[in-house]
Image (cartoon, rainbow, N blue to C red; front, side, top):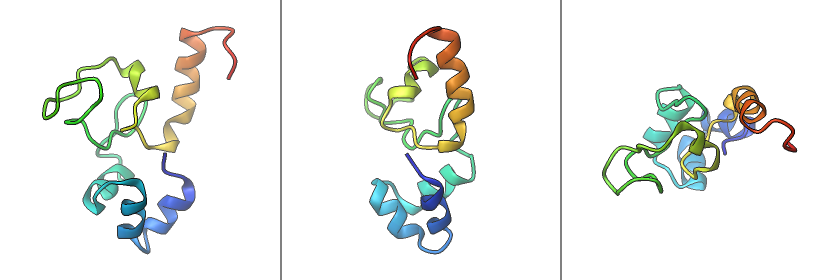
Length: 93
């Protein structure tokens, strides 16, 4: 997950932030600019999802984004909470 500090630091040293998160500086830039957004997250690697064959686009339900290691954007949290509450009413947060 990218923190607000990571996003701020990426403006100054994107290579360091990208290396810390195991992604390329190009992917980091696309992630921060919202070009990799899905319904519930920002996906850092749609072609190497744990839910699909390597090299194939992810075909998993968007609900699996909540547990996927490729999901990194913190600004999706309000939507994630709404989906959580709608799908699992009464579940602890």
